[in-house]
Amino acid sequence: ALGYYVDAGEAFKKAQGMPDGPERNKAWREAAALYKVALEKAPSRDEAPEAAMNGAYCYKQVGDYDQAIAMYSLFIKEYGNEDNLVKLEKGDATAKPPKPPNPAKLQERVKYLKQAYDALSAAYVLFFNYRTAAETYETISKVRHFGEADRRAAARNAVLLYANVGDNDKMLQARTAASELLALKDLLTLNEDGLDRSQASADKLISMQEQL
Image (cartoon, rainbow, N blue to C red; front, side, top):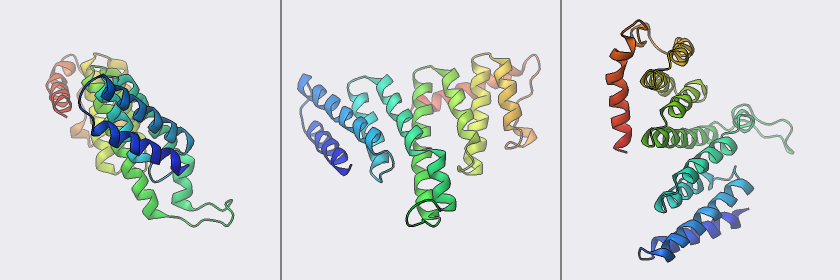
């Protein structure tokens, strides 16, 4: 399995060292494809976070942002598999030999998982897909492995973005889900001018993401 990551890394370095032009674009695509295969074949390896970030970077170099988003999504799905996280958290009695809990490894995996979620949500905002960005932030707010502050911030962003697209129903749902994470003073007041008051905050969030 390591061979997939080695091949992808070599292709990435090759593309980095080439001058701009069609051949370099081809090299970026080849490296991205190799990283994708590596993630699909061995998503739990320590090299997986680097593969996800580098693979997405390769796709961005050739303007293929949909594939970059797909790379983040693949990484989150495979590397952040809840069953694997629980095994790191509580140990794996079914393994031979049984494996004890590994809090250090869990912390490392959660850190990279959060980075991928951040990159994914930022990408959706940058490409004006505010609804999907809101859904992604809402998902982040529900991942129990993330820190409380991160979950609160994600819940707030979800509410603001749902407000930005004028979806009162989803904003209400997000507010309800966020109620256990956010202090009452941080929640938006949903009356007739609630969307207007939240608009400035949503625009600020979007502006910050566009500067990434």
